[in-house]
Length: 385
Image 1 (cartoon, rainbow, N blue to C red):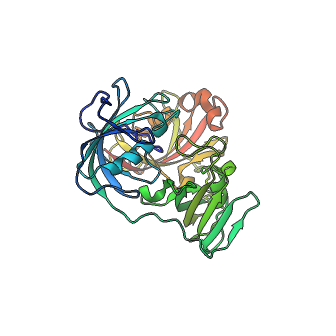
Image 2 (cartoon, rainbow, N blue to C red; image 1 turned 90 degrees about the vertical axis):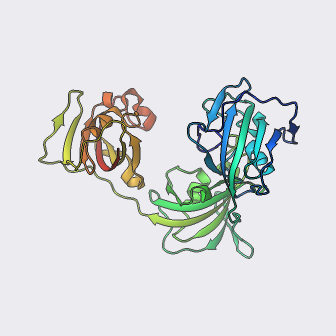
Image 3 (cartoon, rainbow, N blue to C red; image 1 turned 30 degrees about the horizontal axis):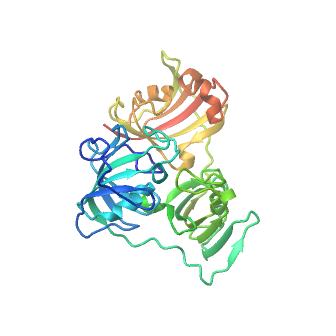
């Protein structure tokens, strides 16, 4: 629950009731804290990676997060990953230190919709800092002496490195390293926390409007700084409790790789038998695969392309991003789930999935008509038992 981008259920120690506040110190932000154990002199700073154990509770003592089952987790300080209360509190203790926090809504999730946490909740935490590792600080791109340019839409930019070849086109898969900054120099997002470039489909709305436009301006190897007006970023309202309303943002982007858009066509099953199951699922086996059949609770990695009336509407192949799912967990549609149990590692099946085993009346939510029958080309890449 500490993460802003990914909601995780985790925490430490034993479940604790909301701590008393009588012995706590209150900071200017409204954060209340009590240092239980100061730890050593390795106090984490922005850009450091920390390993923590923690417990999070609401005012009534309800535990909403606990690492008791999962063990400690690693986090990045000052990289847009943590709520404000944690960012302020963690540098107060060193390794092996322990701290109690009472975080007001303004330093927590405010009015965000977070599972298990009502809006505008005060949050109580008991945190142990197990380890703190320093890393080179993330520095903004140097733009001194670089000509500032501006697009017709109002995006200012500095071309730090020109790169090579042509800029990305709409539909290309682009892999970028980036860091996003607020006007006060705070990092609100960075690929530093994952350690690898992030993929976007350029020009398809997978990033906010200003970033989407920026990606279409850059060839491979280019490095640019973009200053994006709030109307092309997070708008009048900002984002969650992290981006203030009407805030211009700065993005330092490195275009690592451009992979041209893949043209996906439905597999040709001419001359192959179609098998129908009792549920109404029909399928064609293009490759039976090898090894034992997939079983419930196996974890499967697969590529797929999905069609409606011969029109592609979704494809992991096009995104260059296979799906990974536990069998029986309801991650994929019912017809695909049924077919998975008929497949093996290396299997390639074409599935004709009736609406009742696909998206049913929910079709319009993903751009399909209600009660649409669909076709899936599925290839099993790997199976973990």
